[in-house]
Length: 183
Picture 1 (cartoon, rainbow, N blue to C red):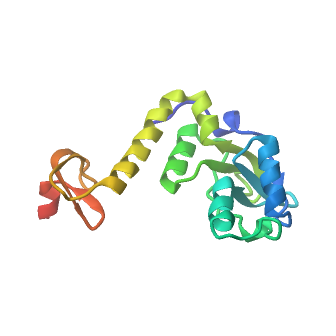
Picture 2 (cartoon, rainbow, N blue to C red):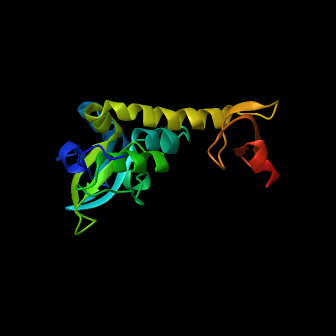
């Protein structure tokens, strides 16, 4: 499904950045100051990583580590999923959904280390609110899968064949209809 909107038309062209050498405390202050959930980590002009509020909670706070002593480089994500400006925003949403992330660095089509901008799920939904249904379906499916049990037949979509079934059961962490369970 294409929207007609390009990533380059929607992206933030000057994302909030931080150095990998900054402390997590300063990073959190910068997120609050700019009202953002993530920062782009740059080394010179090149993209080095991303740090999100969730990274801080999971890797620092929940483990009882000190945000005063930890550096951004110790927490940031360096294996990045990126997109180029000429892609449709639906492609960006699809990447975010498939990789369970909320933001994408936008990189130059000719040099993927050069940051062109930044796009978030919120940016996409501001431009194309109809895509909210696509996102919410994915999260609903994840939530159902997490809560799903084999206490009896359940109605829903078979994860193998994609058909609606009134007799789904969980096998190897996958919801399967009667036909697919027989295979």
